[in-house]
Length: 269
Image: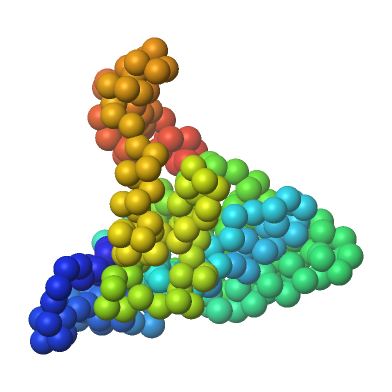
């Protein structure tokens, strides 16, 4: 979901009429789902940093950090209870705040020199204490899924999480009426220009006359010119989507029947 950015000349009354923010969206989701998903079920994007930190400390390899400004986006996960067929947000049966604090504490311990294998074993053993088994949706083992992600750190282990759960997220790109310098400074979606400048997304696109339009005019080339220069057709390099190739149930025309789906499902077994 993406709250709309307002562009063009617009009076104050019109802006107030059409402006919708992330908190507005979250409130309306609660209203329109009959409080099945509430305002308390959401977290700002940088809340995932402790998980990144503990994986980075354990693997001794830098990981991509979603350390953006808290006002740029929010998200949550919901799971279907196989018995009631209702959606159950992650926060309804798991102490997420407690988990995040554990991850951050253990990341600090590993960085300070504590044996990383013993430390991660402590994390895995403690995960189940954050899950209320009585409220956990039928057919779900959250602690096991988290353990797989932490220990395997593989695409399949993360994929299994998304087979079982549905991510709900939103991000709100800025416009000229609400551009915030602090948010720009914390951006993690950048454009790298041919002259090697790094420009935040909301600066590049919200003030196009300063950045996007000038840069595109200076460095752009027509498709025909590009094809002539490189000796290839642009069409030949287009991504076709591996997940949707093939036919039948093996690699059929949808993500739910793709090889990725089957591999992720097997990771849960």
